[in-house]
Image (tube, rainbow, N blue to C red; front, top):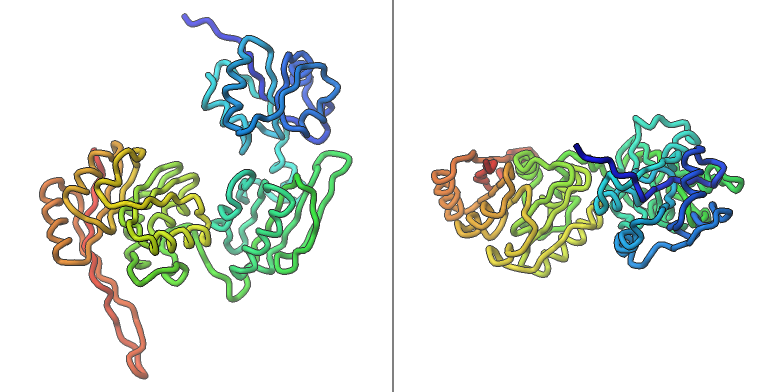
Length: 403
C-alpha cells in the first residue's frame, strides 16, 4: 500500500479581483505560502501576503529547476485564470510528479470573454498566441467561426486584423477585452478592415469571422487549392494531397517526417488538420525550403521545421515520427531507414510519378505488403472555345501501417 504524499506545490489561478476572488481554501493556501512565484501582475494582485517573492525566471524553462530547488517548502505559483488551460500548469505538470501538485483554478479569460460576448463555449475555438507565433491563428480563419484568442500584447489585435483582411475577412467583428472582472475592465469593438484601437498590453481578443465574396476558403480538412501555395510547379497536387493525407492520418500532437518536402504542401496540411501536430520537412534545395517557410507562415503553420539534407543520411538523430511521407528522394535505403524509425502504428506513404520510382514501390509492396494504388486525376480545362479533360501525371502510391 502506497502512502499518499501531501502536495508541496500549489498552482493557484488568480483574476483581476485578486485575493477577494479566491475560494476560502485557495486563499488559505496563498496566505500560508513560504514562497510565491509569478509575474509582476500576479504579485501586485496578492501583495498583502507576506512571503518570499520570486519573479518568472528567464528563460522560462528555468522555472522547473527553480521549483525543484524549493521542494520541502510551501510553494505557490500564481497563474492567470485556469492554470491548466493554455497556462503554466501544464508545463509544470509534465516535469513534477502529479501527486506533488495541487491545482486551484479560477474562472478563465476564455470563460469571462464568452460571457461578455454572449457566446456558447461549445460553439467556438479557444486559441493562444501568447508567447507563440501569431500566425498560428490563420489556420482557424473560416466563415462564421468564432475565436477567442489569448494575445501576446497590445499589437496582436492589429496583426490579426491584417491577417483577416488579407484573406478576405475584413468585415469580421473584433472585440478586445481587458482587465475582465477588475475595476479597470475595458472593451474595444471594431472591424478587421479598419481596426485602429490602442489597447492594453494584457488582453483577450474575440473574433467573429465574416467572409467577403472574395474570401480565401481554407478549411482544415486536407485539400487546399494549389493556388494558395507558392511553388515551382513541382508539388503534390490538391486531389493527390487529400488522398495522401487520408493515408497519413493526422492526429493530435503527432509528428510527421516530410521527406523531399518541396514547397511544404503535405507538411503544412498535416499541421493544419490536427491540433498541436508537428512536422519536419527534409529538403536539399534552398529555394524550395524558402518556399516552404513562406507557405507555412502564410497558411498558419509557422512552426514547420525545415532541414537541409539528403536522405537517408539526414534522417539520423531525428525524433521518431508517427507518420512519414516520401515525396522526393525515394529509394529502398530511404524506406528501410524510415520504417526502422517509424513508431508502432506509424503510417508510411510514398508517392511516385516516374516509371523508375514506380518499380521501387512495386518491389516494396512485394516485400512489406500494404496498399498499392494508382491515382489518376483529370481536370476540366478550356480547349479552344470548348472544355475538355486535361490529365495530370498519374501517381503511384504505396502506403502501410507499421504493426
